[in-house]
Amino acid sequence: MEFIKPRTVEAIIVVLFEIGFIWLAVQARNADDALRMNVAIGSFFVSLISYVAERLMRISFPFGIKFMIPFALFLHAGGGIMDWYWSPVFPLFDKVAHFISGMAVGLVMFAFFLVLDAYGIRFKPTTVLIGIFLLVAFLGGIWKIGEVYMDITHNSMFDEGLPDLIGDDICHTIGSIAAVVVSWRYLLTIPKGKGISFLLRKNKQG
Image 1 (cartoon, rainbow, N blue to C red):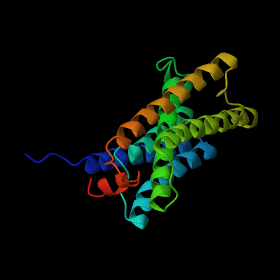
Image 2 (spheres, rainbow, N blue to C red):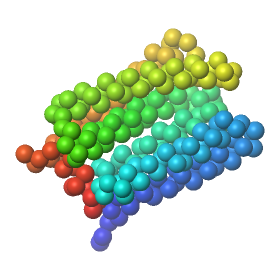
Image 3 (cartoon, rainbow, N blue to C red):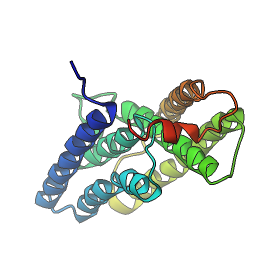
Image 4 (cartoon, helix red, strand yellow):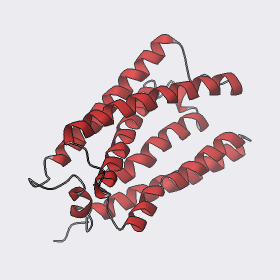
């Protein structure tokens, strides 16, 4: 029996999220929320960037990277449009969203290092893992600044004080650690003497 290839599974998941973004955009439009409608539409196109990059560079990213991007974007876009952030039905939604986003950004950083290696800009595996963790922490700080900005300019309630900030940072950090672990597991599959961009070639037919 021939099983579905991981690349096909990933593509199906991405398509489902793309449909979800269209649904979110419609919900935002019905609520006369132009800003969040644009966020949903933007997320739709951002989720396709990895596929465009694969086509242009004739590579294939390791499994998981492409569907984690729309997963994180869907949670954050939906959290605002559908009020999932503040719903008593999903009391930990915000924390789960930060965990997923931390992991997604970490995997995107991993893909970035793989592409750099393919173009001759090489780093040691240990440097790559540390770099992933530090870059996710930096971008997480920028995200919190964005939440504060949204609260000030749009009377939202993304930032709920110091306890919320600490909780978000903890979940974001755990997500980045998860990305580091996944990246490390991928790095272990590289044959001795090969660069980390070997993972791009290895998954080309994935």
